[in-house]
Length: 371
Image (cartoon, rainbow, N blue to C red; front, side, top):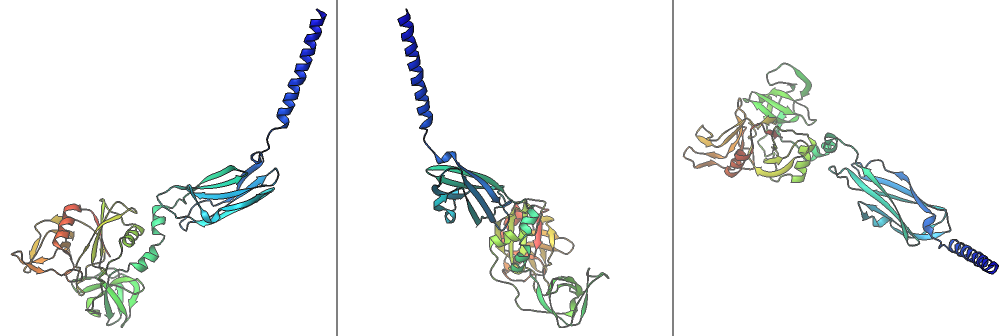
């Protein structure tokens, strides 16, 4: 019995010693990894992505272990930014990596993802952040380049020479002065008239007012262009101007380019869908530069002074300003198909197929801008 007990004790002691040795061996020979000692943190970040797209970021890679080696990468929305990739990096106590670049600003997007990756001894550490767009209002965003756009999209206007100094008035037959005078000999631009008795002019400095029609020497030279502005430029302009409409359509008429452009959408979000050549008011009877609301359609058109136009889209019934077809005789034969240069008494003429399309698709109360 005593021999059995002694044998069990020997076995117990030997087994315990063996277990202890196994435990010590397991903890002593754990493999070393840089992953246990590498951390990364943002040091500097751009707060918002703004219109100019300039951004700046920096991170710090901390190493609490022995010197390690690897590479770093930067990403924008998952795509690597090659110019900021670095290989053969040395990671001692700490190392700082930066990225200063330009990211295209897209107003419709809400945020941009920025990511940094450090690859050290074969393993990766990632750091990501969402960079929000600066909260521009639509008016701020689309209007930011308005002055530059106005310099590219010059408004129409018939060149005139002032015969005798004129005081500018706020209304054609009013008594309120604008505080501006047009000096004799100065060049101004006529942008409206009333029965060839009063003329609205714009000075080279952009000031506007009414003067006596007969005080102007009106140029008979061509002041319009044969080409048109690009779709992108016109779209940027109508959105920057903040034009609104009570319908889903906006009509933009350029006197300088003799064109009618149709936009679909809403304020600050217009997209051009069609453009047509037109013929606006002749030099002595220019089409007024105003914003109208399309009133109603007269499909049969009107017959006057030996000519017939149809259909007629009324903009101003009191003054008889409208969009309509080219001129026909009463029997339907073509009288005057002039297109692409000023020719009318103030209305906007279009080719038959173009005015037909407008009449079919543009509803009343649509904003019509004559520029």
